[in-house]
Image (tube, rainbow, N blue to C red; front, side):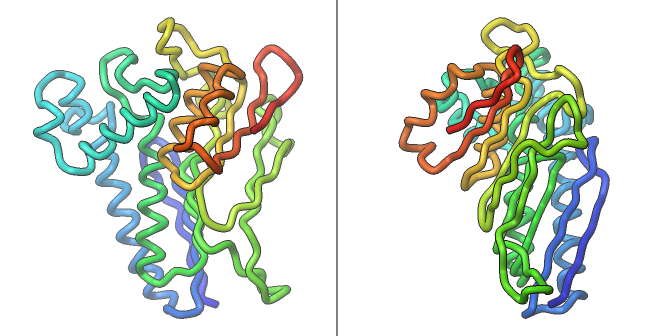
Length: 253
């Protein structure tokens, strides 16, 4: 089993990619990883609200219309509309200071593409961790037992990052957690324009990274009122685990 791991700075954070394969060489995995790194840097150039020349910055300043943007930006715009609808507007990239900001969705979207690029290159077991938004493919190969096992992803206590409160086992799919771990209270409630107070931490597990990412953000706004979202057919199979802000308790779906 050939194994390759890379950590690189982008999007104001560190992306950690771990992959392995029994059918392609370590050198081939390295070449695929270079494509992943280049893709992530292009995502930053296109979507960053801190880069004056990015498409998102130009959208926010009214210098271009969405129809003028490349296909990737138009795709994220459309996915944002879907997530806004599915979350009853609790996730709303247009209801933030300065205009359209898809930051609450784009890392999960990009992590999925990174994972798929590696699988296309021959990687059989992939984990892409984009600052808490993870895309997972093929489980991991346990060399000690000689078997493939699900990736085990822990969710930490937002008040004590050394304590793992919940573990999810995922072979293929995505998981996203939103909270105050790294950036403090940074999520805006689109209903009020104030800081979101619906939850202290929200984790979503499902098939699509972009949707897990967006729903986790929306859950931070809506809290337990969001439970009804998951009765929608589009969210069948998605799992939720939320730590309440005002009570020492958690709830799940």
